[in-house]
Amino acid sequence: MFDQLTQRLGDTLNSLRGRGTLTDDNISDALRDVRRALLEADVALPVVRDFIEQVRQQAVGRQVLSSLKPGEALVKVVHDELIQTLGKEHAPLNLDQQAPVVMLMAGLQGAGKTTTTGKLAKLLKERNSKRVLVASADIYRPAAIDQLETVAAQAEAEFYRHPDQNDAVAIAEAAVAEARRSQADVVIIDTAGRLAIDEAMMDEIRRIQAATQPAEILFVVDSMTGQDAANTAKAFHDALPLTGVVLTKIDGDARGGAALSVRQITGVPIKFLGTGEKLDGLEPFHPDRLASRILGMGDVLSLVEDVQRKVDQKQARKLAGKVGKGSRRFGLDDFKSQLEQMEKLGGLGSLADKLPGMGNLPAAAKAQLDDRQTRRMIAIVNSMTPKERRYPDTINGSRKRRIAQGSGVQIQDVNKVLKQHKQMQKMMKKVGNKGAMQKLMKRLPGGGGGMPPGYGM
Image 1 (cartoon, one colour):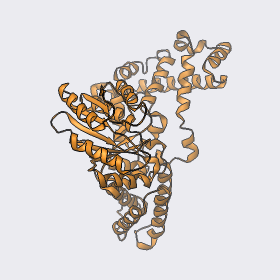
Image 2 (tube, helix red, strand yellow):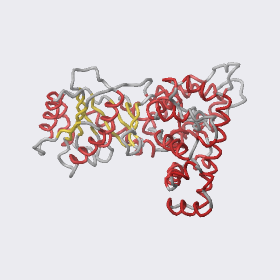
Image 3 (tube, one colour):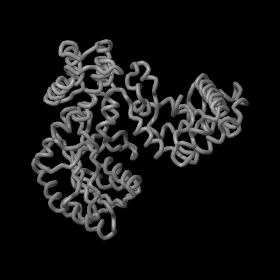
């Protein structure tokens, strides 16, 4: 995410190292490069102009502190202005309402409204302990209602199907009434999308809004459309009182123009970022954290939250007990478990995004952070017998050929997994002998959870 922008800004700001004072002369070239980087990231021109002018006013004439280099001082200025552009602070959902809290999903066709509806239902259930009911008011797209019903089941949310599928407003009203009857905390109504903005579409959603009086009207938009995302959001906001924006497909957007343009152009806060098709791929939007990620500083807070929420604490404690107890205690099943935990955290790419300094990795290094490698390694271990997983030293040449054939890889790939497992054994034994891991586990929440061994390698 934002790889292109991160690389360009990093190169530009690093060019100022060694200067004693930030003056108009020595930052003019840097700001020109920043401007070019933002435009190439498809940030809207008015936003770029305002951003550059604000950075110039804040940076020129600042005396660099003795503990800072000029490049770092300008990074601070750019970081602060990025936060301002992205919306200053986190804007949470308005859940402080009498139940059921009504949420309306709006957007163009293909933006990901139905999937986002399921993701939001799952998030509210797991993080806010809310009982959620979802309903589809899309009476135009074939199988739209069936699709939402499937997504709702995956999210473990209640689903409402109206007998009449010809009146979107009646469906929305009935869904709210059903949520009230069933004592649901939140009702999310997925509305119809179009391939383009049209007055009939706007009139229908305005009538749904008037009938249901939603606490949240969330505009779902594909981030890969760049500054068009901001322009579409503005057109919707002119017709509807939007309360927030959800940027979807953010993992496929190497530029980041939508995130930097939407808030500034519409005045509507970004509330969530969506990634992938899995229902846990929705994260609350924090301007300060995203600004840090764009500048290659990482996002440790989000990483810690991911670990606490997604890592199996019981499994982590069990594994910690094996540290330093001898190499045979850490088998290939444990190794596979670590790989699966990494998958839950979004894979190597997601981890790299959130670790400080990793955002400025060369393109060749980033290409090696391929999550397909992790899945391939899991497949290799799955092709082994229980005895082979427990006693890897028994895996001879013929066994390797069988494992390679069973997992669809080459023998050298099997050798690589065995080598990495051996390295992990040695590392864990060394850490265990020093007592460092036990101390770390005690400091983590619950006295034994947290990041599994090996993630810090």
